[in-house]
Amino acid sequence: MKDFKVGIVQLPAKGDKNHNLEKMEEYVNKASEMGADVVCLPEMWNCPYQNSYFLKFAEKEYDISYKKMSEVAKKNKIYLVGGSIPVKIGDKIYNRSYVFNRDGEEIYRYSKVNLFDIEGFKESDTLSGGKSLGVFETEFGIFGLAICFDLRFPEMFQRFREFGAEVIFAPSTFLVKTGEKHFQLLNQARAIDSQCYMISPTIARDDDLSRNAYAHSLVIEPSGEVVIDMGTEPSVEVVEIKAEKVKREREKFPLEKSRENRKL
Image (cartoon, rainbow, N blue to C red):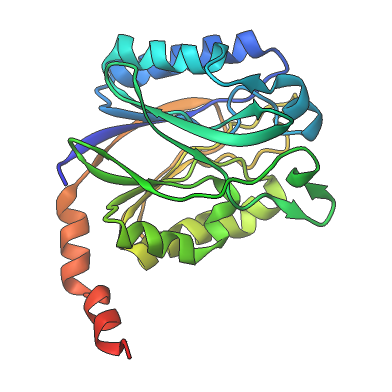
């Protein structure tokens, strides 16, 4: 792994998709100007986090949001981890993330496996879950990609580690009630479990359709230390990711060696 700079975009999702697309481009441009090599968007950045909007804003593959992300990545010569958007395939809608390289080419995609089904709200009322998990590679290293509710499933993050990941992106849209209790805790736990950096951009809070968003985008070191908490307002931050932090944490606590020793 090599050192690199990551841009974290925290913006609210409005009821006007064109507005969301324009704001995404504006914020990614800013992150690039600040020196970011890789930029990550939040979960459902183009769509308010409500089942009715998942249905209303769902796009076919390679539609307007996909094209705009590709265009923005190419224009800024960055890697873009596209948060997630609702994508319609046949009669199903997926909560899907796309990753683009510096030339605007798609290099990876992931559909959220663990749907947010809790008391009072079910993503599965409108969304279908993905079935596969993997990693993607850049010149900076191997990265994992999860989405929001996936943070509650530590076995996924152990798989990322087994696949060679040293940085894991987890674009999210936690709500205030659960976010206050669990968002930072889960990110710290997954960082410590996997001995990876956790990079978790979230939707910003506002007085409109994102008023229940917890926000507080995070970057967590492999040790569990919080590098940045972005609060609730719309913003862009750029953070340096240091390969030595991963290397040293794994040297200090050789968890994989312990796993080998206990195998029967």
